[in-house]
Length: 188
Image (cartoon, rainbow, N blue to C red; front, side, top):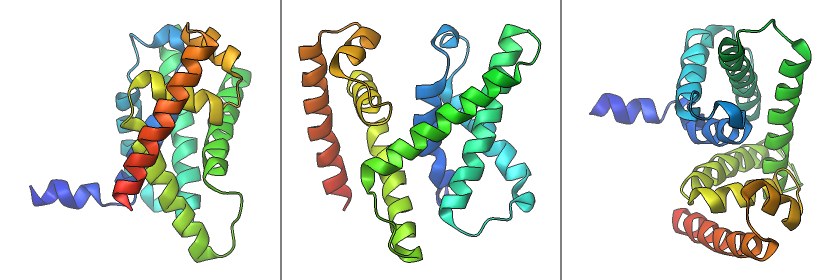
């Protein structure tokens, strides 16, 4: 039992929720039945653990960037294995860009300022808390919030993706933000 608690506090394990959120939003919808985001994240963390001595970063933000790169490669490898097609560097690059953009927008959602190293560390900690809180929301609310704030889609575009009316999307966003605020306030 003590081993489980100790592993949950490791720097790599603390990023599980963050990576899971990115993986869920970036896995190709066509492979949802064949690829599981939590399996992808587990594989990502395993690869990171095995290559931990190769990481030369200093800050939590650098660690998150390194983990995102491993996540991108893991998703690309899994999708390539499912497709059994030749490697397409363009597809892999666009996946890497999409994950990086999602992560940047998620971070921007928190704050646009980076005053000091301690402020950046606190912001990174907030990002991890936000990702964990988002994962605690029902799927429709999480998807609507992610599409609105991380993909910057309109209510109509979100409605098309989720198969809902713009009014229903607005309701999902309202309920999701309220629940998210409640979760983050409880943790603080």
